[in-house]
Each structure stands twice: as structure tokens, then as C-alpha cells.
Length: 272
Image 1: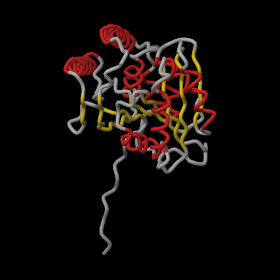
Image 2: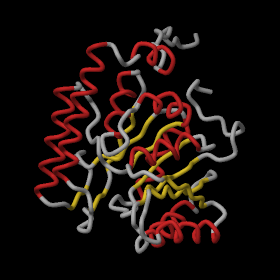
Image 3: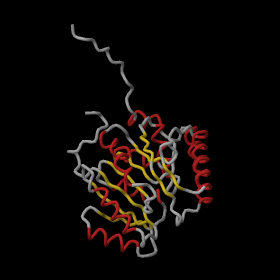
Image 4: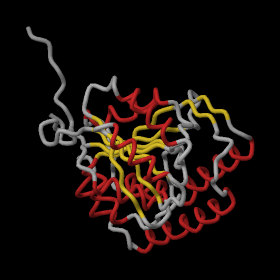
């Protein structure tokens, strides 16, 4: 068994899918129902965690109603907003072997969920992300969002030498032991959370698996693109400075978490 393989006898719960929500009383129920239907076909145990992100409408009541109806749905509540803050709280508190998240609008086709988490369950990879920028991905969104997304990921490649293709797709998973090690070092509690986590993982020598996804833009998205872009650029500058000054313990993380160097194998010989 690989040193990174998830051991199914260590913990009974294999996958915990977190849905961070803020004022989603009208869409949360449909999201959970669809996700429950998808998870029924998975060959291992699963749970949905609704992370209520300081909602001011009836989202929390709807979430508790769903948790009452289904044994594999639970709810956590945060008094402060921030997607990254919600994910950090839910992932660190999870007893699953693999933790994941997706946006409540289900812009990403759920058929990509099992290919996303399977390499983590098997031990092949450490983090998995959905990507809208792979040639095999099928994406429906406006030219403005497409342009901003590609520019942002180009900035990451230049400024942080990132090799992953899509930092902000709301469709990711991580092995729990990796999350426990990396999350205390991730400072951002909002949208830059994803990028910071991925950069730390890549610099630590972890394997990031990418899954091309089918993705349809949500026309009712409440994300302030300009404000988010401004905060993301500040995050890029902060992270670049931290790496240049040695503030981030990248070497220690690589020693603790990184995959060991390959050793040369003896050539196979045919029996006489």
C-alpha cells in the first residue's frame, strides 16, 4: 500500500462534501437533493456538510430541516462571512478521510465529483481541483468572466510560478491529513483561500490532480468580481513576499508532506 493511500479501516467516513452557503434559502434544498442522488452511487461512505456562512435569511433553518431528514447531512454555523473561513472550519472539524467542497449553485456538473475524489481515496494524489481551462472542459460563461479568469491564472503563473490551471473553480477536494497540515498556514478567509492553499500544496511537493469539468455560469451569482479581483491581487503580493522572505515554512512542509524521491528500479530480465 502507498504511504499516501487512505486506509479505509482508519475511519469509517471516507468523503465529506462541504457546501458553503450565505443567504441561499431558496436554492439549498435542490442542491442537497441533487448531491444526495449523486452520492448514492459512490462505492464508499459519504456525508454532506452545510456550512452556513452567517446567513441573515432562513438558510440555517432550511439546513437544519435537511439534516433532520437525512442521516448523512450535517450543519455547522459561522457568525462571520467568508468562503475560505467556512471551508477551513468545516474541513478541520471533519472526521472524514477526504474533504471536498462545491458551490451551492452547482455550476459544475456533478458527474465530475467521483473522478475528482477517487485519486485521493486511492492515494494517487493529495489535492484535486476542477478546471474550466482544460481543452476538454465544456464551459458556458460570459466573455468578461472568461477574460478575468484567464488573466488571473496567468498572473499566478508569472508571480507565483503556479502550475495548476484553474485556481478559483468552486470544485475541490483534499486528503484530510494534508488539510490538517496546510490549513493553519492559510491566512485568507475569503476567495483567495483556494489559491493560497494550492500554492502551499504545490510548493510542498504535493500532487495536484486536475479534472476537466462541464461548467455553466450562474447568472444570479452575487460575487463582486471587481472587489474579489482586487483582494486576490493583494493576496498574490502577500503570498509572494512571504515565500521570498522565508516566512512560509515551505522546506519543512516539503520534508513532512512531499512525496519521496523516486529510486531507480533494476531492469527487468527475462527468465532463461
